[in-house]
Image (cartoon, rainbow, N blue to C red; front, side):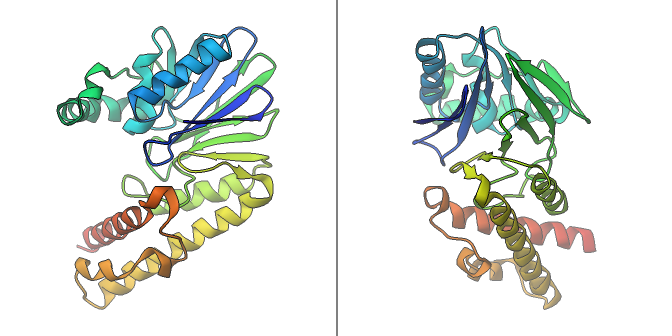
Amino acid sequence: MQVERISENVYWFQSEVYAQVTAGVIVGPQWAVVVDTLAMPEETLELRRYIEEDLRLPVRYIINTHHHADHSWGNCFFPGTTVIAHELCRQQMEARGFSALEAAAAHDPQFKQTKLILPHLTLSSGNLVLQVGKKHLTIFPTPGHSPDGISVLIEEDRVLFAGDVFLPVPFIVDGDITQMRETLRLIGTISLENVVQGHGDVILRGEILDAIEDNLAYLEKIEAVVNKTITEGKPQDSLQKVQIDSCGKSRIFLNGIAEQLHQSNLRSLYQKAKKKNQ
């Protein structure tokens, strides 16, 4: 697991095991806040060890940016914490999480030690502000990757933990392409020093607007390709020929799973468009 201090009392962690998924820690004088909890129990426990032994603090709050397992299943390894998320995150975890975790544990024994902990404090609209020492964390909805997406802005440092709404390759299978565009444009209006993506490396100030435009261009391209495929009466399978490189993204992103994400985007857009036209 990679660890980096990205501003005073703000730390970034990146998995070396699963799809470069990230987590964050904001340190106060007496306790810390964790943003997302990584995918694999071994790395989540290493994250906890780092906070408790290296930073010498307990964790009081966890913020889940959305319900997906690689961002929320590690809640259980921080007993006694208060978990903050969107109300839809709690609903999705309650509806899908228990059966998904049971299936994961049957396939991979290390998940047998994982228990699903639902969010305790939720928001459905507007902002929630959490003070950590001298820092103020503004938590607000950022849908697009999923309806329950939230981001965390550290006001004093201008660091945004964006969750999966900001990725090297936008992923919209569980989300909505229009909401994704709106959220990316919203992020572009915020004065920021860093964007912490849900997966991948930290985006620096001089790269943020270019990264947003690059993601918007990708979304426009895949939407146009899918619409053209449907208009020409071609089947969904024909989209397999549309590789990620032709849509302006590299297949090497996220340890090589970028093409897989891209093909899932195409299939999802095709199915949603066909359903809408029925």
